[in-house]
Each structure stands twice: as structure tokens, then as C-alpha cells.
Image (cartoon, rainbow, N blue to C red; front, side):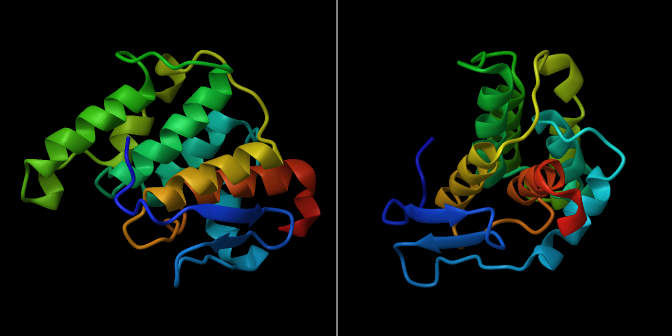
Length: 176
């Protein structure tokens, strides 16, 4: 899936240092203290902090919004990392999300579009393997979401932020 901003590429991501993200394009930065991920972190507290649990947290946070190409990129990265390899082209969550985006582009009313929660609702059936979120996972998902964002930002409470929150909980629960 191509980026709508081909000139934007992530050059540095540090989940460890307050989710500092730098991009080569002007204005393409997300630098936020840990407090900015509190919504995503709160959704994960009491849950296992695996890749699919992070997707479920995103669904809890922003599941009402129509699924977009930015979401597909982040979901693809999560799904690939969760199963440890190539994802199914037809039956995976990424495929469902891609079809939803194509459908949504043909629909004018937001309330009739397929939302992120609808797509992620199938995660337990579609992704049969899972594992704990690592810093590399969080960095890759943030990079995927940023590289496909028309505004060079991540969605507050969305997939990338939820994966980063899951990593932070795994790494140091007291930091949240």
C-alpha cells in the first residue's frame, strides 16, 4: 500500500524517550510525553499486553471512527508481527480492513461506513497467534501509521498509540 506522502519517511523513533518521533518532512513530528497515551494505556490496564490486545484497546478508544488507510497500515504491521510472518491475503484482519476502506471511499455518510471497531472485532478469529509487544513492534507500527497519514501524525488513541502503550506497560508499568 503506497503512502499518500511519499516524501515523508520516518527517520527516528524512540518509544523509550516519550515516544519521540522525527520525520524528514517539515511538520512531520509527534513528540508527546507519556501522559498523552493515558487513554490507550487505561484501556490496556488489567489486560495482557499483546499485539492483539493493543488492537482491542485501539478499538475501545477510537473504534467508532471509519477505518482509513492509516489504520490499514498499522493493522498490517501488527498482524504481520503477531503471526510472525506473511499475512493471509484474503482472510486476515488487514484484508478485512482494506476492503472496508475501499467500501468506505464509495460511501458519503460517515454513519454508514465500516468503522475500526467493526474490523478489529474479528481479531480473535482472524489472528490465531500472538505475542507480547516489544519496542521494535511499537516503533514499526508508529512508523507505518505515520508513513500513511496524510497529516504526518498518529491517531490519538489509535492503533500506533495503543501498541506503544502496550509496550510501555510491558516494559515499565509504573511509567504510566
